Amino acid sequence: MLEIWGRPYSSNVIPVIWTAQELQLDYRLKLAGGSFGQLDSAAFGVMNPNRLIPAIRDGDFALWESHAIVRYLCSKYSAGNFYPDDIQQRAVADQWMEWCGSRAFPPVIQLFFATVRTAPEKRDVALIQSHADEAASVLGILNEHLSHHQYVAGNAFSMGDIPLGAVAYRYFNVEVERPAMVHLESWYQRLCERPAYQQHVMRFFGRNPSDWQALEVASAKEGD
Ligand SMILES: N[C@@H](CCC(=O)N[C@@H](CS)C(=O)NCC(=O)O)C(=O)O
Image 1: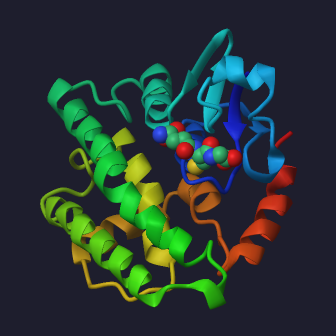
Image 2: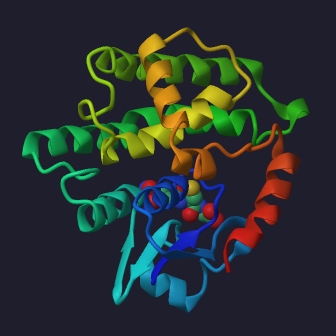
């Protein structure tokens, strides 16, 4: 059975679990990282020498890097659907996955760490605002793209929506002011209608580090 190594609240693990659920794969979540540890074990090092989550094992095959895992799962288990047959459409999906890693994920995750993962008395209002501004400015590029398309790689949901969809949930649910971006919001609403997104991405992540910690501890029941 497919093994996904990671923790359900990790930003890079969420896209992988979401993908597995979209594809209705039978998988086992092996808890690792954060308070679950395991990353220093010899066995984990063989699977992922970076000692980071996520990693997967599919039979004898191991893979790490969340976007590579999403591509692998989509190409193996849903050719022509989440992994578009059309080479150019697939390239566009790929382009936005890369863009997510290089442009969208960094400011959104910094915003997330500066708010949810920082105790309220230690928060830096100016820093939060600068991450929020940067996130909004970058996501404005996606907003413009989505003014012509329902989804990232055209008019059907594909792997291209997955890493960005996970980032979007963080962005839309941290407690900051956001400028209106109608196309981005409509796309996000379409994702919110997907059961797998509701189950694995739309997780209440708390408002401060102690909420977060409690949620992570409670998520132990989702894996082994
Ligand atoms: N580019 C990598 C980044 C992996 C990464 O930084 N993972 C973090 C969690 S989001 C990690 O393993 N941190 C150590 C931990 O969670 O204990 C990917 O997308 O898979």
